[in-house]
Length: 218
Image (tube, rainbow, N blue to C red; front, side, top):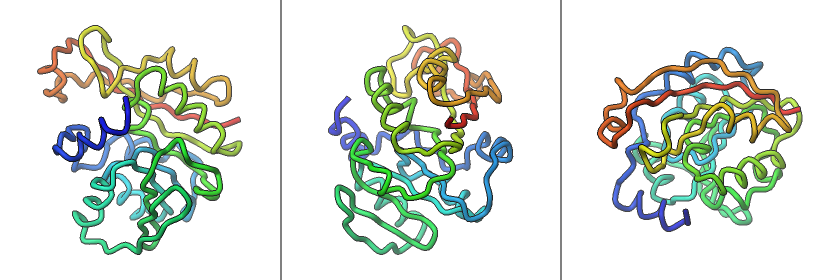
């Protein structure tokens, strides 16, 4: 899955993964994290997610990384925000008070690009990647995050033969294999969402679970 795939999805507005509403799992399970007002939250592969505005409104600093310039431009224009824009190394940084989005390749990130991150919110990054890139993503994430960083992770799990991702199926054992070598892993909730996600049923799924995890970097 190359950069061109995602650039084309945004160009053609094929962004069914984007949700206007704030993610209910974010709202419900955020309180399980040991996070304080003013802490920095990292949102990888953030798209134009309105979840970032919710986090900002709750008093946190937010930094996202997104490959598509169209997604970044749309986020700010849709929300009537006028960012300052500058180049920082491999990234174009668009910023308003308390929130910045780094436009560029996640895999080019260095710890200095993010600063002191306290929490990661991953609703759409891990599930957006096929197996080989998922391993690379988690490996990169492990080099970016200091000990005691918490991760709120949301995944989908479904019979892999029934649908070709994205979003890709990530089962419990996949999360354990990827994260347990360097994180403590806690499954917070599992919800059957086939009845709510009509698009997935139309793509041929007979079962899909949405799962929420709390991870803590050791």
